[in-house]
Figure: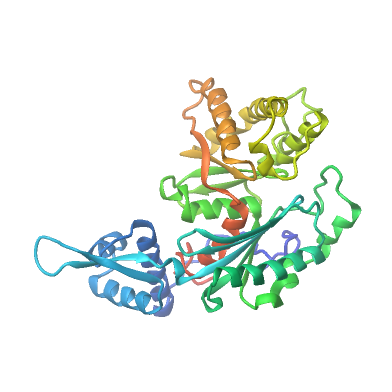
Length: 407
C-alpha cells in the first residue's frame, strides 16, 4: 500500500514495515529456489550441481530440476565437465551472458546516459549526451532514438529484454543547482515511467541514482566481497547508498544515504551542503573560474598543468569536507568499505579515495574501525548500469521477501 502523504515519488513503493509472519505456497518457494540457484551460479560459477546443493541447502534432486529448467530457458550454460575422483565427470554451470538483457537509463541535471547490460553485468552498448537540465520531451526523444539504434547495432534479441531501469536524483526538480532554468520544474509533474512506457512495452523499474548504483554494486560488483558498505556517488551533486548484510537499506521513508545534504565544515561557504563542495558541478565551476572549461567529464583525464592544479585543490577541499561525515558513517554503520562511483574518471576517483584514506587514517585511534575508501568496481556509468540491474534484481535474482506474503 502506498502512503501518498509520505512518498512524493508515486512510482516508488514506500519502505514497508517488516512482513507479517505468514506461510508461503509452492509456486512462491519454487521461484525463490530458482532465483537463489541462479544467483549462486552467477557468483560462484563454473559450479557443479553437487556444489550448488551444498551452497544453497537444496536437495540434489531439486538442483537437478532447477538447472534443467535454467538450461532450457537459456539462462545458464554447461561450461564443460569437471573430473572428480570417481564416476562420470560432473557438469559445470555458468550464467549465459546472452540469457537476458536490461536497459539502464540515468537522467541527471547535466547528462542523460543509456546502457544495455547483459546478464553478466557487462555494458554491451552505450549512448550518452551532455545535456544541461534536459526537459521531459528531450529525454523521451533521446531514449526513443538511442534505444532503437543500440538494439540494432548490438544485434540483441528483443525477446530477451528483461526490463528498463531508470535512475535519477530525488528532488530532481526541487534541488536547485547553478544555472538551473525555471522550466526544469516540469519534472515535478511528470511520471518518467509513463513518459517512456510505450517505447518498448516492457516493465520499467525506477530508483534514486545513488541507490541504483549501490544495488548494482551489491549484485554485480564489490558486493561479492563486501556485504556491508557505504556507496558515495559523485555526479552533478553528491549522493549515498547503504548496503547492510547484503541488502540495500532504504530507511523508514526510503531516503537513507542522503549524505550530500549534510553541511560541510565551518568556514566553507557558510557551511554549504556537502554536494555544493564534493560534486562534479563544483569541480567544473572551479575549472571555469580558472579559465578551463571542459565539454564532458572525460576531459578531466587530459588537462593541462594549470587545470590539474585546480583539480588537486578540489580533491583537497572535498576530502577535508568529507572527513566528519565519513567518521560518522564508520561509527554508526561500521561498513567493510566505502566505495566511490559516478561520473569522475577512474584515476580521479582513485586520487580522491587516496586523499580520504590519508585523512581518515589520522583518526584511526579515535574510533573503533575505519573502513578503506576505494573505487567501486562498477564506477563507470554507475547509475545507468545499476538501473539496468534493477530489472534483473526484480525478475531473476533473490528477493529478501520472496517467501513472505504481505500482511
